[in-house]
Image 1 (cartoon, rainbow, N blue to C red):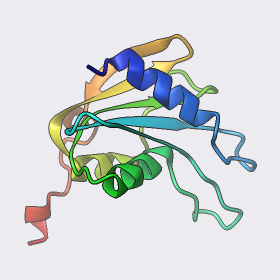
Image 2 (cartoon, helix red, strand yellow; image 1 turned 180 degrees about the vertical axis):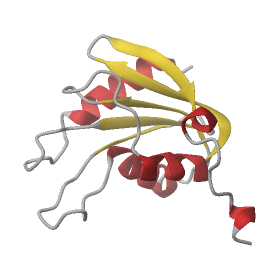
Image 3 (cartoon, rainbow, N blue to C red; image 1 turned 45 degrees about the vertical axis):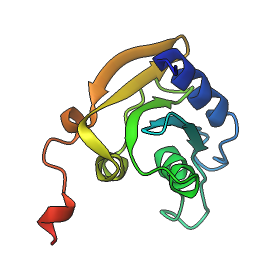
Image 4 (cartoon, rainbow, N blue to C red; image 1 turned 90 degrees about the vertical axis):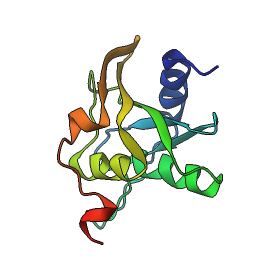
Length: 132
Protein backbone atom coordinates (compact mmCIF):
# COMPACT_ATOMS: atom_id res chain seq x y z
CA UNK A 1 0.00 0.00 0.00
CA UNK A 2 1.36 3.41 -1.00
CA UNK A 3 1.78 5.82 1.90
CA UNK A 4 2.08 9.63 1.95
CA UNK A 5 5.79 9.11 2.69
CA UNK A 6 6.10 7.02 -0.49
CA UNK A 7 4.51 9.82 -2.51
CA UNK A 8 6.85 12.36 -0.91
CA UNK A 9 9.86 10.22 -1.85
CA UNK A 10 8.63 9.93 -5.45
CA UNK A 11 7.97 13.68 -5.70
CA UNK A 12 11.37 14.49 -4.25
CA UNK A 13 13.08 12.13 -6.69
CA UNK A 14 11.14 13.67 -9.57
CA UNK A 15 12.20 17.19 -8.57
CA UNK A 16 15.82 16.13 -9.16
CA UNK A 17 14.92 15.59 -12.82
CA UNK A 18 13.37 19.05 -13.25
CA UNK A 19 14.44 21.15 -16.23
CA UNK A 20 14.39 24.60 -14.65
CA UNK A 21 17.44 26.52 -15.92
CA UNK A 22 15.66 29.89 -15.92
CA UNK A 23 13.82 30.00 -12.60
CA UNK A 24 16.16 27.63 -10.77
CA UNK A 25 12.97 26.43 -9.06
CA UNK A 26 12.64 22.66 -9.44
CA UNK A 27 9.34 21.05 -8.50
CA UNK A 28 8.34 17.41 -8.31
CA UNK A 29 4.90 15.86 -8.04
CA UNK A 30 3.79 12.28 -7.51
CA UNK A 31 0.25 11.05 -8.05
CA UNK A 32 -1.34 8.00 -6.50
CA UNK A 33 -3.91 6.91 -9.06
CA UNK A 34 -7.08 5.01 -8.31
CA UNK A 35 -5.46 1.90 -9.83
CA UNK A 36 -2.77 2.02 -7.11
CA UNK A 37 0.06 3.05 -9.43
CA UNK A 38 2.28 6.06 -8.72
CA UNK A 39 3.00 8.53 -11.52
CA UNK A 40 5.63 11.23 -11.06
CA UNK A 41 6.56 14.37 -12.92
CA UNK A 42 8.88 17.37 -12.75
CA UNK A 43 8.49 20.86 -14.11
CA UNK A 44 9.92 21.51 -17.56
CA UNK A 45 10.64 25.13 -18.41
CA UNK A 46 10.97 26.77 -21.79
CA UNK A 47 12.67 30.02 -22.70
CA UNK A 48 9.41 31.13 -24.30
CA UNK A 49 7.48 31.80 -21.08
CA UNK A 50 4.81 30.60 -20.24
CA UNK A 51 5.33 27.57 -22.43
CA UNK A 52 6.73 25.44 -19.61
CA UNK A 53 4.89 22.57 -17.98
CA UNK A 54 4.32 22.24 -14.25
CA UNK A 55 5.25 19.06 -12.39
CA UNK A 56 1.61 18.24 -11.67
CA UNK A 57 0.76 18.43 -15.38
CA UNK A 58 3.64 16.14 -16.28
CA UNK A 59 2.53 13.64 -13.62
CA UNK A 60 -1.06 13.78 -14.89
CA UNK A 61 0.20 13.14 -18.42
CA UNK A 62 2.13 10.09 -17.21
CA UNK A 63 -0.99 8.88 -15.41
CA UNK A 64 -3.15 9.20 -18.52
CA UNK A 65 -0.50 7.50 -20.67
CA UNK A 66 -0.35 4.72 -18.06
CA UNK A 67 -4.07 4.10 -18.53
CA UNK A 68 -5.35 5.60 -15.27
CA UNK A 69 -7.77 8.51 -15.08
CA UNK A 70 -8.47 9.21 -11.40
CA UNK A 71 -6.22 10.77 -8.76
CA UNK A 72 -6.56 9.56 -5.17
CA UNK A 73 -3.70 11.65 -3.77
CA UNK A 74 -0.79 13.81 -4.88
CA UNK A 75 2.40 15.01 -3.20
CA UNK A 76 4.11 18.24 -4.26
CA UNK A 77 7.70 19.09 -3.37
CA UNK A 78 10.01 21.98 -4.18
CA UNK A 79 13.45 22.00 -2.54
CA UNK A 80 13.53 25.80 -2.44
CA UNK A 81 10.11 26.33 -0.84
CA UNK A 82 8.55 24.73 2.21
CA UNK A 83 5.01 23.54 1.55
CA UNK A 84 4.91 24.24 -2.18
CA UNK A 85 1.27 24.37 -3.15
CA UNK A 86 0.01 23.71 -6.68
CA UNK A 87 -0.46 26.85 -8.79
CA UNK A 88 -3.97 27.89 -9.84
CA UNK A 89 -3.79 26.14 -13.20
CA UNK A 90 -2.59 22.92 -11.60
CA UNK A 91 -5.35 23.10 -9.03
CA UNK A 92 -7.87 23.00 -11.87
CA UNK A 93 -5.95 20.17 -13.57
CA UNK A 94 -6.00 18.17 -10.33
CA UNK A 95 -9.72 18.87 -9.91
CA UNK A 96 -10.35 17.57 -13.44
CA UNK A 97 -8.95 14.16 -12.54
CA UNK A 98 -10.01 13.75 -8.90
CA UNK A 99 -12.79 14.11 -6.42
CA UNK A 100 -12.86 17.17 -4.16
CA UNK A 101 -11.75 14.94 -1.28
CA UNK A 102 -8.53 13.77 -2.94
CA UNK A 103 -5.56 14.38 -0.66
CA UNK A 104 -2.84 16.89 -1.52
CA UNK A 105 0.33 16.43 0.49
CA UNK A 106 2.44 19.58 0.81
CA UNK A 107 6.03 18.62 1.53
CA UNK A 108 9.29 20.11 2.75
CA UNK A 109 12.73 18.49 2.88
CA UNK A 110 11.69 16.24 5.76
CA UNK A 111 8.46 14.90 4.27
CA UNK A 112 4.74 15.63 4.34
CA UNK A 113 4.07 18.69 6.50
CA UNK A 114 0.47 19.53 5.63
CA UNK A 115 -2.43 17.65 4.11
CA UNK A 116 -5.22 19.47 2.31
CA UNK A 117 -7.81 18.40 -0.25
CA UNK A 118 -8.28 19.35 -3.88
CA UNK A 119 -11.63 20.87 -2.90
CA UNK A 120 -9.96 22.90 -0.18
CA UNK A 121 -7.42 24.27 -2.65
CA UNK A 122 -10.01 25.02 -5.32
CA UNK A 123 -13.49 25.14 -3.76
CA UNK A 124 -15.32 26.30 -6.90
CA UNK A 125 -13.51 24.34 -9.61
CA UNK A 126 -14.95 24.10 -13.08
CA UNK A 127 -16.73 20.80 -13.52
CA UNK A 128 -17.27 19.05 -16.83
CA UNK A 129 -20.99 19.49 -16.23
CA UNK A 130 -20.45 23.26 -16.11
CA UNK A 131 -19.50 23.41 -19.77
CA UNK A 132 -21.86 20.75 -20.86
